[in-house]
Length: 101
Image: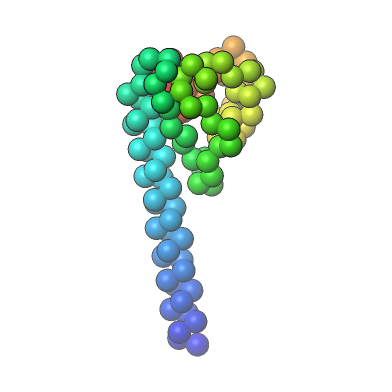
């Protein structure tokens, strides 16, 4: 019984470490994205709150700027960000990713 309890405790600690690593990876991506300024500069995906990376993430600022409104809305939903107002959706997404509009 004590071995099972210890294993459960170790599993919980491993899950916490994985969560912290995901947060650090996200912060690193945001820092890298903040240093981009040219349209062809690479941008890095940021994980959502569950630690998942978005599928089909644009590879540079130009590709991000060329996302359709539906694609921007999809990514806002992925990150749990508000969809309204529609006029500032791309700006909100960029700010969340660490990219200066």
